[in-house]
Amino acid sequence: MTVDNVAALPVRRPAQTVFDRTELNAILGVYGRMVAAGLWRDYAIEHGRDAATFSAFRRAAERPEAQVMKIPAMRARQGLYALVGEGGAVLKRGHDLRTVLAPIERKLLKVVAT
Image (cartoon, rainbow, N blue to C red; front, side, top):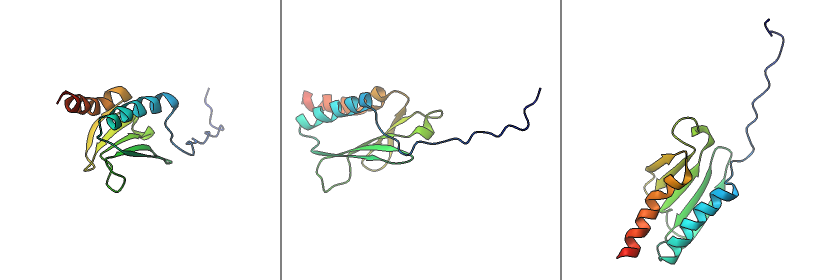
């Protein structure tokens, strides 16, 4: 039995890609510890059609020191999340936000230990 006369349903993408509450809690937890250590002072959140971005700044007038990106198109390939450094290089990708945030946590541990 074949179904030739059935039209395919159009694939609807969401209007915006956003961080949910658990993702924001994890990101803001790391951000708060970096602020307490005196490394970061400002942040920005951008919700777009293709990606959501959390940018952390040393000073508001600079480029972001780190960006956490949520890119749904990369979910099946390299992972939903990406950590991008100041120069624009991707530092870490993954399916789990905690593992993507791990390099920032390690940097924080080095600063606190000294």
